[in-house]
Each structure stands twice: as C-alpha cells, then as structure tokens.
Amino acid sequence: MDARDLVRSVKVVGTARGLRSVRSAWRRRRTDAVGLPRPAAERARVPGVAQGAEPEPGGGVVRFARSVLRVRVASGGVVFCGWDGAGPEPSYALAGGALEADERAVLEPDTDGGWRVVSERVIVAVSRMGAVEVRTPGGLVLRRDLPPRWWEPAEAAPTADEAAPRPVPPRWVQRSEVAADARFFGLGGRAHGPRLRDGAYRLWNTDPGGSFGPGDDPLYLTMPVQLVVADAGTHLVFHDNSWDGEVTLREGVEGAGS
Image (cartoon, rainbow, N blue to C red; front, side, top):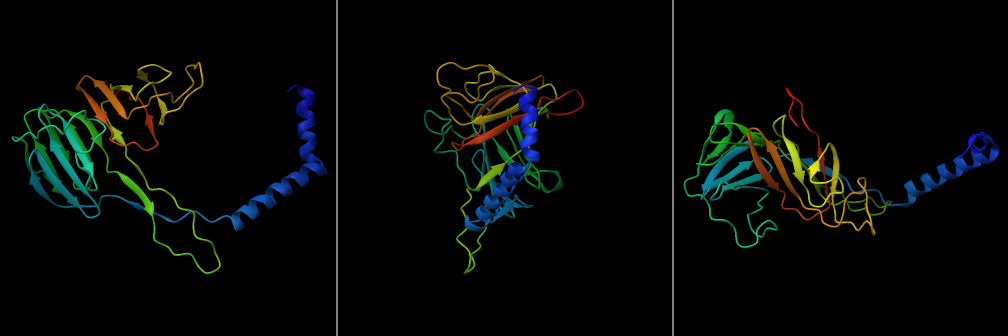
C-alpha cells in the first residue's frame, strides 16, 4: 500500500459507500445475535475451604467444600496430585504401571487448617484454600500451585421463545509460582528451541507444512511436560491432560517470582 492507496481507503470510509458498508456489517451482527443460539451459561468453581483429610498409602485425600485433592508420594520423590477424584492411572506419563507409594510418607495436619505429606525426599503442603506447595526436605519451596479454577456449564433451560443454548466445553486454569531465578524448558518440540522464553505456548499438535521458522508454533509434537531449573532445585511437571490448552510463562526477576 502506498500513500495513494491510504488516501483512497480513508475516502471510502468517509463516503456514502463506506457508510452503507458499516450499516450492512451492523445489520449482520444484529441478525447473528438474534438468530444464532446464545452460548450456554457457565459457572465458575474453586475448591473452597478444606473440610478434612483421609490418609492413604503415600499420602492421602484432602476434602474441600467443592472438590477433593489426592496427594500421593511415590518412591524416588515422585509426587502425584489429582483433583476431582483423578487417580494415578491411567496416565500418559507412565510407560508401565503406577509407581509404588512411599510407605514412609505420612499425612499430618499443617498450620492454618492445612495439611501436608511428609516424606524422606519431599514435602507436599496443602493450604486450607487449596494451594499446593512442593518443598525440599529442608523447607525450600520448589513450586507453588495456586488453587485451580474450573468453568462448567450451568444448568439453565431455554425459554419457549429462544433456541437451545450453544454448548460450551468445560475448562480450567491454574497459576503456578516458582523461584525468581527459575528457567523453563520443554513443552515438546518448539521452533524457538528447548529454552522457553516469556510468552504463550499452545498445547496442540500442528503440521506447519514443510519448513518452519522461530515464529512458527506449535509444531508436530507438543507435550504438557515442563522442566524448571533453579538454584533451589530442579523439578519436572507433567500435566496429564490431552485436551487443547495453553501455557503462559513469565520469567522472574530478583525479588519477584515467575
């Protein structure tokens, strides 16, 4: 586009033809709003306040007002956390069966109404509102997952003069905090390379069609696997979920977490 094209574009907007185009677009939008079914109503949900806990081999189940969390520490310090009744199996992360639970791990009450699982290699602390901290035996925090939030379809019957609402799939979001000096790697094949910089990364396999450059993402094989390297310790996280998703990363600075 040169200067003449720019002037021509401005002129079209200011002419009668441009005004008719705006009116036509407005009418189409109004028609879609009336004719198309509205999206179904959603209801947000958080775990709520912890109500109690039940011990199990390797950890236990913490019950909240609107959800349950199962924490299990396996041999070698592997930690499983599953919300809403999710169990260690079946799992995309395991080639064989589930790892044996650490029989020495103990579920015990923590401060401020929370709970914690104490083992020889790792400590998992669960707050009364559902935040989960993974700590070293010495107490250093490797990762802190804030309480998850779910959006689920709300039960709402359509009225007699409107169409059935357009279904909306359930979704969830969770924010995690790590050390300020932490650096991120993983999430499968990425055009930018193994080191993950600030930005949003989609978890959905895509064929870029032949060659690809640094800005092409996602690629052929994405994985919900994240490696976090920090002075306090290195840990690997596998989100056992095969649905389309997005991971947003922000590297920290001294005095502020990631």
